[in-house]
Length: 434
Ligand SMILES: NC(=O)c1ccc[n+]([C@@H]2O[C@H](COP(=O)([O-])OP(=O)(O)OC[C@H]3O[C@@H](n4cnc5c(N)ncnc54)[C@H](O)[C@@H]3O)[C@@H](O)[C@H]2O)c1
Image 1 (cartoon, rainbow, N blue to C red):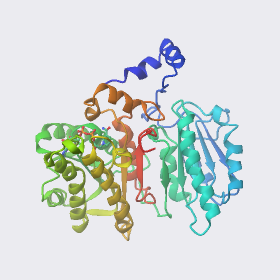
Image 2 (image 1 turned 90 degrees about the vertical axis):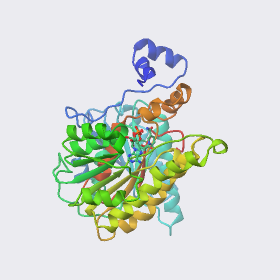
Image 3 (image 1 turned 180 degrees about the vertical axis):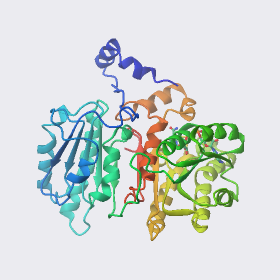
Image 4 (image 1 turned 120 degrees about the vertical axis):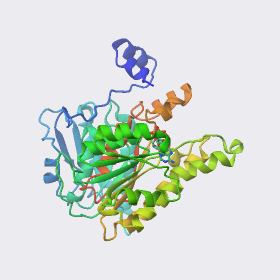
């Protein structure tokens, strides 16, 4: 379902009218394309206070040169060395003079340090960066995004900075992402980082899953398109187009894990749990027949297949698990007690499994939490609720399946080993659960 309002505000009379009425002003977002893979413009690197991070070599590899036009496409503010409230004045001093000049669809990335539990002044100042980032994200406008990365080691954060400072993160804003200690990145081809790797995407016959399979294939992966037997024709069509294979399988089948292991005797590198369903109804009107399938597809089968694949050693060294949560699991949503429960469960699974999966194997476990994404699922939502869902975020528009796919591709990247146990919302900084 096309977003007609976005088209209307792109015209001169539309812009005039909607501004006069004080209505939302969505800006067309700049997404990745082979012709324009980088942001248009340079990078401004600022530091608030003293920092120990060696950022220059990492930023030099983002593909963005230093800004020499006074209109940067990206601003990186290193605030990782701030240890007390007085230090926060440097954040204001650094960004206040340059914000107006940041280009449309530009990026502001604030770098912070992990909170020090033994120093409440440092913790207060570093936590302050979170409120700062989220507030700036809500006011900056013009398709620009603001995110915070908490890091200890600049090289370990490279894949994250490259993602956030690129058009691939167009719909990711107001996020706080933690990157851990340095892990030597596995060797990879820069243009096709997943080449030689196998990626299985559940629910990939259409919608977000199809976009994920397409983006992972673009990055070089051999994709396995898993979907229910009833969607086999679509799954085959997607697989053929991407040079992959289809796997018709109901993920809730008790032996689904064993069937995947059997279909992939050489193991797999990337496992994307994307299949999901909704059966909305307020709890007072919800029979068990609407409750159980949602918990089964969205959560129980994710736990079962993950356990089966890990137990069989099917996930290779440096493997990546990306599960699909939702902002409904973070903020809650009327009519979605079943769905919200299942998606919050994904967050629990990711946070608890991440430290264990990594141990000795270099496997990471993360989640993407989509907000309002333009798919068949959201096209079926009644008009008024759909329009509210689209507009109630800092970018005043819905995201596209490719936005979730690009985020998944960053998490699946061989150089993203330091990103583990994170739940990254792809929601344009939705006002729900913000
Ligand atoms: N669209 C959104 O705005 C949005 C927002 C938040 C989260 N999500 C989540 O993103 C994921 C994809 O959503 P979508 O909008 O593309 O949905 P969709 O309904 O378009 O696609 C889901 C796919 O999963 C498949 N599937 C369902 N049950 C399955 C099973 N038992 N075994 C195997 N495959 C199964 C379906 O056949 C379908 O192809 C879901 O987990 C959904 O909950 C979507």
